[in-house]
Image (tube, rainbow, N blue to C red; front, side, top):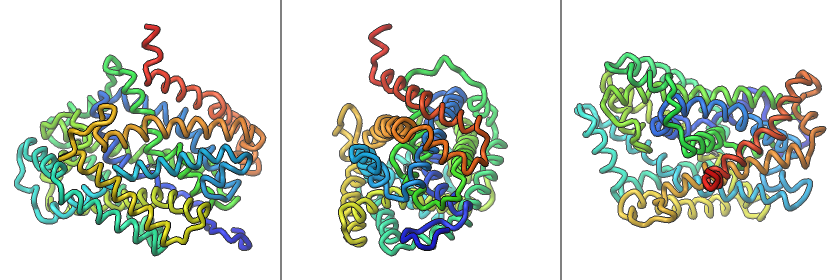
Length: 453
Ligand code: PHE
């Protein structure tokens, strides 16, 4: 650890791993992944997702880590080092963070609502799928309750960043992340043992490629970016606090594996239960919230288990919102020379406006659509399926073509602790495979290939 550097440096690789896991593991894994699996036809979606993790997500993560660790600067600063114009990548990230926060805080607010209602025993009497669904839609389409919980969540995230209590969060994460993991495993076992769960397991493990459309592929690739938090410089910022000894290949691989396992576990919990409780797998964003209380009701002490689960989901969401919030705040402090308090307050105030619009778009503003999307869905689709992949391609090009092979080789080989072949494969994927794959998918997504069919 270098002591003469004015910037903080993470003490150990374990810390590096845990804080990046705090950023990556969140609602994306537990809320978004299972419902996309449900919509995308199950196993086929998962296979496409896993391929995209290996060939697109992991290489881009390596690039972000390399850029961050070598410059020790915030996202805008890090990408401007070679040429100011590449700083645009950092600005893209700041913009994306802001839009993601617009809908992420709304879902985070739902976790509080579900925590409170679980503790209150609101779900214990429910027996039919309609009751779970009705409760959810009633709640999200309302005006005040979801808004208040969203604002409370913003306030909590704001306080953590303003007070700079990340240390506390870091320490808490070390205990809470493993706790989340254990609860997920227990729930997965419970779900598999529910009646009729075989239908869900088959759905998860036997692929039916006839259901795959270009939308499925775009959703899977978009989810890789969203879930791993790549494509917007968030991990670049975290890696700027890595010490020069941190093995970025190892950290990236571990992070990718943990993130993927949590997502898979979440769908092993949700999908079998979906078929058991009689819920439609294509229910979309409501899926996790309408299914989980059904699983908890089959367990002893449902109120307690449910409250603990939503509390952990709340924490997983909080560690992610902190990193999103921090990307914009750090930019305002370092590049716009604002004080911390002013920067945090501006970000929070603007986020309140965005999140309020997103929350209301599920109820009173549901008639208001842009490109056919209500605001909540627009924020979601715009970031995952367009801006993050675009940012990802640019990061690949920047790291492997502009900074070049020699740079990437030096960063990835960690004083030649890794064999040249593995590093060469990493660089090859980064240079050719990831950007080309994302670009082709992007063209397909905007309908270019349809013209030739
Ligand atoms: N990866 C986070 C999740 O899965 C969301 C996120 C995206 C956080 C981008 C930071 C940056 O919930």
